[in-house]
Amino acid sequence: MTIEIDDSGTGDLIGNAFIGFLRKETGELIFRTIPVDLYDEINWKNKMPYRIVVELVKDALIELNFQKNKEKIQICRGDIFDQVRTYFNEEGINHEPAIIEGKLQDAVEGKLINHLRKLGVKSKKLTKESGARRFFVLFNWLCYDFYNREKYVKTGFPAWNKVWRERGIEKYKKLKRSSYKNYSK
Image (cartoon, rainbow, N blue to C red; front, side, top):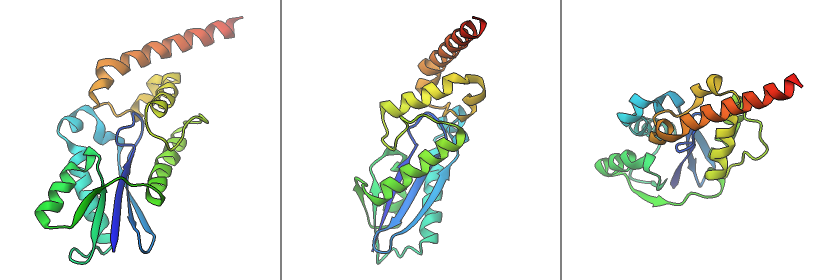
């Protein structure tokens, strides 16, 4: 039997992140959440998301009744799993790096998109595809109501305080000025 493990949202600017687990042979699928507050400056500096992911993986494997001597794990190569791989090595758990595609990837990315929709991201350009396009969809959403939405930002990412926070405030002010001009006409 094989269990796949993949993540979504761990590198996205906005919202919680998710870890998905799929037992390939049975289709059993479960998720764990990494709350956005674990990505604040202090927690990020102390590598808290990485440590919590180890605990989330342990918990999920218990729920899946993982049998160390009978099953193997295919785990996404993302750096969020670095400490998980170390744990697997220490425990003698059979694992291999994998590019996760198909059912699990779709499910865990869908979990993220549903979460972002619940936060209020309405853009039709928001898709399961990660990368620059999704970054700017989320950044633009943030800028429309910056001070009320900043609580959803992974503020521990170094680029947030070095570059993007200031740009977000500037864009927010520009949008406010623009809407005020349109309103006062």
